[in-house]
Image 1 (cartoon, helix red, strand yellow):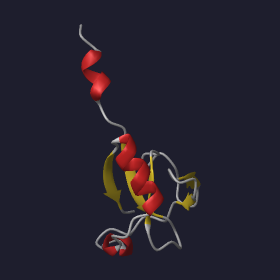
Image 2: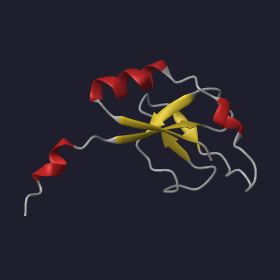
Image 3: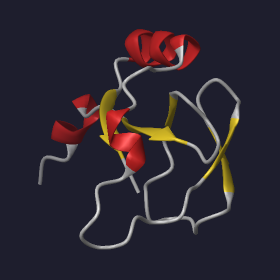
Image 4: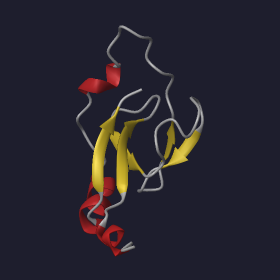
Length: 88
């Protein structure tokens, strides 16, 4: 069995707008791994408070937020992370 094919896989990061914040921060913490209200560290060491889930049938208000933390962006670029914008 050849398991070296995984050696080239990239780390996933998730771009999240924390509760009360106006820009996206990148984190390696997978959405759903933590509960609403819990704080997780972004790549730039800012604490992101996980927001409440949006009720079914509504679009998350954070969906329109495209501004990303410049420090997180720099780390993502240098480390060649794969990013996904995530809205709750």
